[in-house]
Image (cartoon, rainbow over all chains, first blue to last red; front, side, top):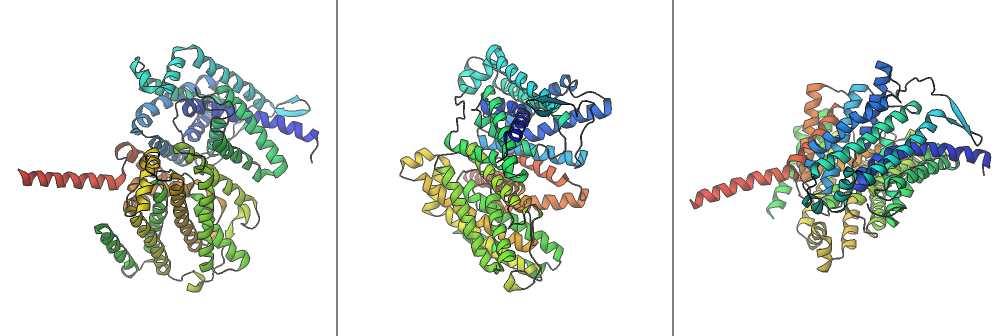
Length: 290
Length: 324
């Protein structure tokens, strides 16, 4: 039994990793939790965002945190166009078709990246990459601490957007009653595309906050897809606070799993949680539908 | 009956293929196409006829593949017995996954995600435990003889695969013409209505997932003996699950010949792209993905649906011409 001196840093480290997961899951919460669009391309789009940040940094010397002004809007545009041009048209009234079309998008994006960017794993070189912050005796990398607070801010902003703005109200109306929303004059296609765009913009934010402490490769999204779905379901579909808490829980579970079960078996806890939650409590921890 | 005659005719012709094709390279291409049809038909039972979209058929495939490989390498068991064990374990895994998910009424996208998670759990486990060779994988020693299910000529592999695939296609023909199949399709089309008519959806879905798992596991056994190497990514990775569903979706879900059409179409496309662009990493998969998107956008009922639409249009046209 490892003692507290090992467990506490492990938990704190798990919390910061969990915040990164939460960032990726926040966008999915909007897309899957609110609009019930299964987006298998979520990981692939995150990867695109990471390459965006990577090339902005290596070609133009733009700091990842400055890229926050560029990458999320670009990702928003990509998301809006994808939903409007492809995903929205593909449903033919069936969820399964959306599943398949986003799977197709994931395959295309990932393999095109494999071709364009080669399979090498790349990292960027920023001066603060190895700076650490000491909290409760644990030394945490500065970029991860920044990402932790970035996740908090993003969750709050999304919550405000949903609660206070017309767009948020329209999205909630659509999620609840599509026909009724149409009847009161909501432009369904536009609002769907706006929400999808926002969800993908969140991935842009995640990419900017992720890259200083992470890496990018064409397959990097894989690891995030199921984790993000797990977090969304765990957090209670459509709840941003839930996604944040869910992300932190998953991060800690993974860290402790790695500590007690070893590196390769550590992630198994995540999938077991996912299966158990889906089976026994598909409404999630903070279970209510938006 | 007409369908059965066509089916048997196609398979009779397929039986003769190795006599006509003597190049081992071409035989391999044909084997991989038929193997894709088998994988696709296995998925089709549950996904096409049962309407349950599994994203984790690798769970059954990998179990079949690892069973035959592990029993052979660790316990010296003959692969023909391993085949039986692999199929049985594949069915057991299917029954377990089916029981835990259908019991709690998981449908649609929930079912898809949970099957994906099950396959991931198995991938991580096989990556960790020793008897599967963990991350290094498992290499089946080369001992070519028919009693050892390792054939010196590709033709031997072809006929083994032909037999399994024929069994899968006959099973699906039977599903299309049996009370079980009628119940399964009723559950697919409207589960609540089916229940109201006295169908037990849980039972029907369990039977479908076990049948589906059986043939997926057999495909896994074949894969292991054919390539003689396995690792967690090959056996339980998402690529198998994706191929399993891509083939019948391209070809036509819930149709007898859909998986065959889909397998031929996909492999023709990938052969042609390889000829034209060469062996660039990722390119053939990009084309797979684009085909998938285009099919879902414009032909949601697959190639078989397209064919049916064209032929029915032609027959209505001729009928109208006759009436005129």
